[in-house]
Length: 344
Image (cartoon, rainbow, N blue to C red; front, side, top):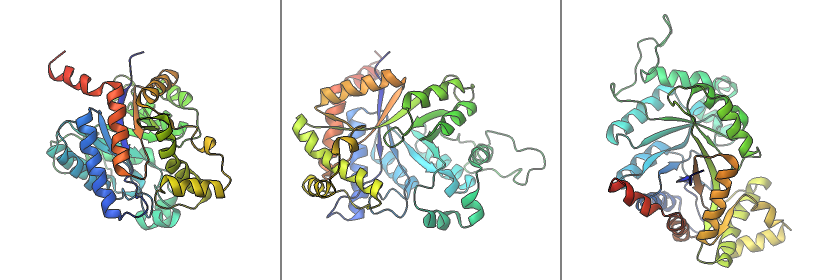
């Protein structure tokens, strides 16, 4: 199996002592780093009412990241479709595609990306909050974009998103369960599995996707695997930086969410909570660049992933950027980009 494609997932994390506005600017800085380092995609998540992540205005960040970069694909990882009108999502992403042709991705998820009360504020009715119509919303999105025909007599027949004549960017189904794997396969779309926080077996999820795949927008299945990874100059430094990620995981599990902690504060808190750090970091690929790249290639071979989308948490945004640079160097991404430019 060939080496996996590498991409970046960013949640716009806020570190302790940092203003949320700074985190937004650090996401744009990271997009530039990822572009220059040779990563294939840069996806931005959607979260609301979170003190840890401020990627709430996803489409705005995508536009700014695409403007600040040259060649990398930029997209949503993802837009939580039930939070939004499918018509408005089509308009937003067709506009992005018109401005940055061939560089935009539209990843779609069905989770709220927030707590129940905030989801209600987004969806504006309890009926919408309880609805289980994600597949229907995807079909509506495609029909508003002019890619599917409305059934005769449909209430929205004749309603089309603007700007007309612009294709909807490639659709991806995001998921952390086998539901999304089956749906992506049945619709003939790309699939991105959130291994970095899912409890499902990633190999089973990607196998399920391929078993259910029927040609649609894609003629062949294509699977992305989300993974948490951290590279540093030494294994010892990587282990120290990863304390921040461990504390983040503990905060999510214990309901004590907050900004990213420094390694020192994280170590103190993890000790006070008598936590099994190894258990919290069991999915994190960390170490020197060569170690991390070798681990990622092994993961790709074990699961059958075509592409790995890496998310990294460090308290210091510059250390986060450096981790991606080191991993790109170990994977030879710059050399790959150069070979593409010269037509090799």
